[in-house]
Image (cartoon, rainbow, N blue to C red; front, side):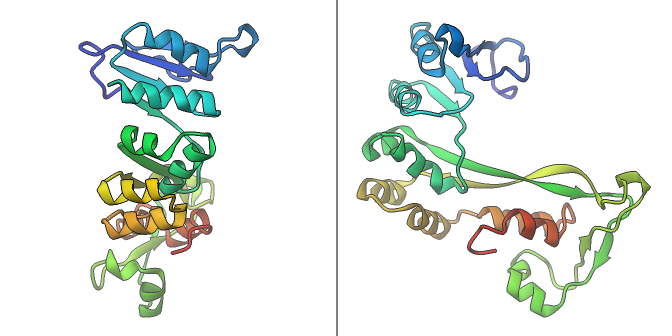
Amino acid sequence: MSKLDSTTQKIITVEDPVEYQLEGINQIQVHPQINLTFASALRSILRQDPDIIMIGEMRDGETAQIAVQSALTGHLVLSTLHTNTAAGAVIRLKDMGVEGYLITSSVNGVLAQRLVRSLCGHCKQADQPSPEVLSSTGLHRFLPAGQPIYKAVGCEHCRGTGYQGRTGIHELLVLDEVMRRAIVAGDDASRLHSLACQSGMLTLYEDGLRKVAGGVTSLDELLRVTEDQGDA
């Protein structure tokens, strides 16, 4: 949100709660006790001619429907959903009652994110993975031959954990024509995920492998965070 130009564009958010105060952006905190819900706040917002709307979280069908209608009428709508993968967001919207043809008309893309712990810069130790590990994990696709990866050790700087701070791993699903046809046809999340990968999407796990190859995190940490992913 802070990257958007709030001087030339009218930006309004609905959040629960407002976690960051952003200059130049109109932020609304929901109060269910007085019936100021995501849905009711959105209806009021649309009368104020915003350019960009940010919805803290789409939790119910009513909020999702209004968000989709807002996107269809020319507003840029940003929001979050709780799903395991980027493709899962499409199915989640369908579960909340949004028709497939409306999803294909309104959604431009879905960015999935998970957090992995970053290796401590003071004590991380170089490790040369075996050919078997390179092959079984898929790391050989991202790690130049002979280059080491790093593993956690632990020191006084990281309280013996081997990690300091966290960083994100992401997968970006873009709704191209193939994806739109699949959504309208009613394909499930795994099929949508496969189509996205065929179109060049890096999965959460693959993006994590890039972070491992770059020495940002460890292979053990990536496997811990993505253990529910089929390709991990």
